[in-house]
Length: 227
Image (tube, rainbow, N blue to C red):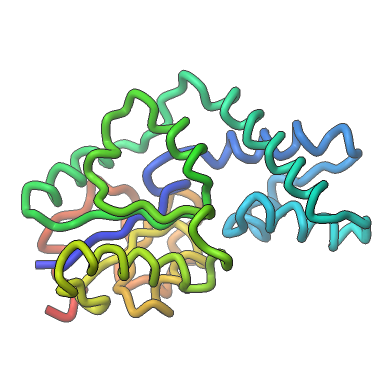
């Protein structure tokens, strides 16, 4: 039986990346900046909002400072919440998997590069936050994926709740991107990739690849763990 399951959020629990992409471009358009869909998914998907904006300005050779970056990030968040408001963006199979894990008393957590305000906005009315004992967001870390800081933080918080019994090699991270898989593996976790954002051939480093969370069973998850 796995000790715990740690979920990425965007692209795993919630189909929110199209809304994030639209919000970035609507916010950046008055500055004469446009992110192509290819670049967004190929280069920036693992970044936090602040890191994406800073990296974009750097690549464009445009001067900026922390105050401007934070202002743009706040405007993007407001735009994103307006776009996502009232939409049902939860992937099929998410609730069922969470109920299955909960029924087996397997602790669940979120490790996301999103902000907590964004997650609350997307899950408003969905009633699934109750399944997660720990939520680690961009608000809680200094370094985003592929750095393992977020996953290590989630493991530390889970172990504080469970007397240190959560072993990384017997816990799984569920991810949709190469950056997320790298972060999870650096933290010592087993990895499951779901092909919501990328094709399976882009996610071959995962211990298990599925096309949707509805495919996962306890036996499949247990099969990749150290026992």
